[in-house]
Image (cartoon, rainbow, N blue to C red; front, side, top):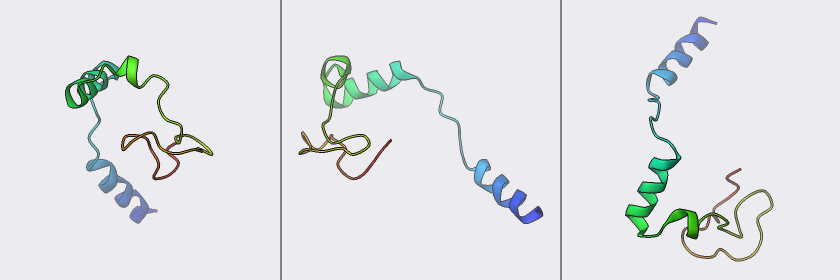
Length: 68
């Protein structure tokens, strides 16, 4: 039990909480891509999700595996 607790403490000591929200994500995407996320990504992707199918739309579309 002691070793498990030590391992857990070491793992959590290296994890810093993110202090951001959806507005920050929106702004980051806008600055990086130049696109307004609500218009371009609100219903984005044909390949994402459980059992994704079809061809990825572009390099942004998640086609490397299930992300859900």
